[in-house]
Image (cartoon, rainbow, N blue to C red; front, side, top):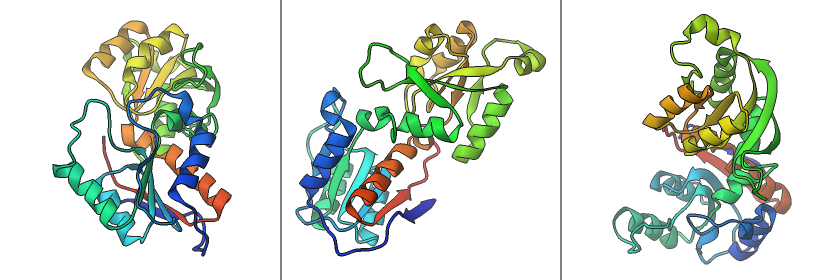
Length: 273
């Protein structure tokens, strides 16, 4: 764990898991998304919620931290019950669910709705800390875009690398737009129009190039991404799946704390991927 901070003071207030989920569903327009996992309440702990822990992924380490924090609910970006995964509650999956149920902890997860929200979403919060302004959708026909286009002060790749490193606490892996362009040519090329989609969205790089972006920022990188960036003439910055998706769940927790006056603690389980 590398971070642990609470957004409001302890109180005697409480809310049901269903009421909390309804607020988040409405705020994030969760019903508008066709997702890879259910959004909303995934495990009902069966008791009123007086304190909440937020985190990126509902791993066992986060559950243990929530237990130690006496939390009644966990809110995450990466929850459970993904399409195609085995249904039985055994092994690792069984241990996670069992700990939640034994300690009466509800688990609430939001995936694509938390990526796409225009104010507190992962893309929006990443653009904000990188001093970028979102101007549109990476796929213009989407009503709730999970990828965005942003503009920034024209800057070199080295300048953007420094900004990402400072904002996220880790240096991105950078693939330059032109193969064998040389350092001198690379430094002369300025970045001002950027495609953004956090997490594992590296394959959106081709759409970013189609939309005239100078660079694409995401979390992960695949072997093919290197060749695509070089051949399409677009800089690629792989900034870490986990690192790029801390912002949305933190912001949602802050929104819940403000709305209901409940203590919400963000716990960051370190993840280099």
